[in-house]
Image 1 (tube, rainbow, N blue to C red):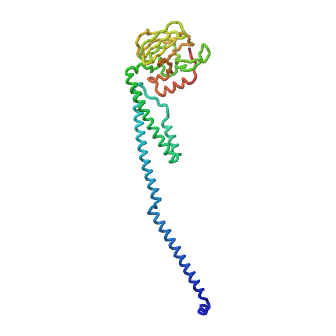
Image 2: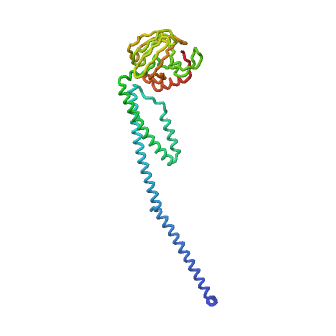
Length: 318
């Protein structure tokens, strides 16, 4: 029967059937080779890099190397800056015979900076790094110039550093005697806002008043006036100090005094609301805030406390 069917099928039918079988065979071979190619590519990618991957890895390694070099440079600049700062602090100690002031909470600020850095992207960190590097280099230049100026000033001053008014004129270890600071204050007699050119210490009559630096007695005023009994000391280098409303004067015009010498006893003379001492510092003819010149006696903490007291708003006594 099959032989009859073969005889009945036309020749083109056999050719079509043969073509289908070859097509199926070709498709099978094609899928097989595609699978082999995919497996080969996957295996090749695990052990070998493509040209693009190779270039990316080379670029990444170069960036890591540049980052390491920049970090090393940053550390060197930081070390140089710390050395310059320490030298500057040593010059300050020698010149002013006191520790440099440090008002900032450095550790707290440092941890806050770390938290900010963690929230930034690599690009932002790079920009910050280059900006800080440039700032450090600028600061180093400025600090070196500042150090040269300080060394020049110290050399020129020499022994005259003792002529800078650097202590309080009265005994005030608890900082409780300061009752009026430098600046605009209500004048108790005229009842209006007027410049207060010094600081007031409320102390009992007869309290000791000290010279705040080496110098010469420039003037002694004992006549009746608003300031009444007053002493003016000339310390040289443009510095002068003035002590008003005294009760008794222990020096004369032209006398040489040294820092810590008793020059008078406090009183309540002249235009004074109550017993107190009015103390002024002048530099090159200009009145300056005496609080900034107590660096030889006050620690940084005491200085901060005195500044807080001075800013609390006080009543002038003269």
